[in-house]
Length: 128
Length: 128
DNA sequence: CCGGATCCGGTCTGATACTG
DNA sequence: CAGTATCAGACCGGATCCGG
Image 1 (cartoon, helix red, strand yellow):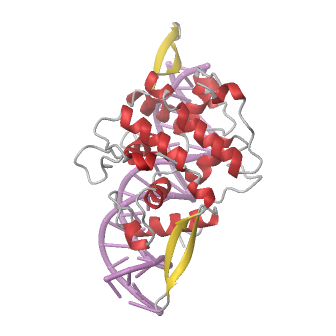
Image 2 (cartoon, each protein chain N blue to C red; image 1 turned 180 degrees about the vertical axis):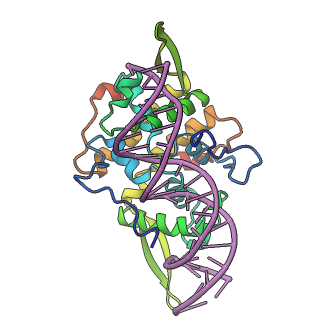
């Protein structure tokens, strides 16, 4: 119930970020974990929950489940069952989610240039 | 003392984000407010504390002060006194901070395309 | 086992009040 | 004007639990 009762950012609410696109985007991906999930789906080819949970950054499972829900609610990812008994889902980016690629690329580019020790991504990731 | 005792992300610590550039960048700008401050400095020409506090998103003053400190510690901004009696500081982006422009631009581009009602930034902001 | 859901302690956020 | 203090409540993250 803790995660479910999180404060919503609804139109008219004090916290509603206005029409600035940067601000609006940050309402969706402006936290430490969401973009890491997107990165794993976009660049690392992950699709299953267990693969996502296995990230280098050790995302807690409750956080992962919560972010997957929010990403789905924001139409950045879809989940489709790939087996029954028990039902298991594969998570994939929607076109809307895929479109975040340039954002991730620019972040990676900045990191490679300005943060020592970061690993350069393979070139195929840096191209459309 | 609350803000000062925040958990540090030091090399060797469990929480240290590894060499992934995206992850490392998110350690610096991966929260809801930091990039908004950068946006104000980069696109809106703000320099003074009071201008930054006046953002549309109503950033709380304690959060603003905290983010300015962290941005300075990360060498993304500098503060220089622009008057004495009393000493007042102007905050400006360093080259390292200015270099985040492509990230902000891609975020704004994504927002304009995929979030209804976001305002398009003037073209001069979208060019180097 | 896998994919989460629940619990819980501690941390952080953010509204407001306050100070020099 | 440029921050600092305070404090309740939101949120994170580790551990654990549970249904299929």
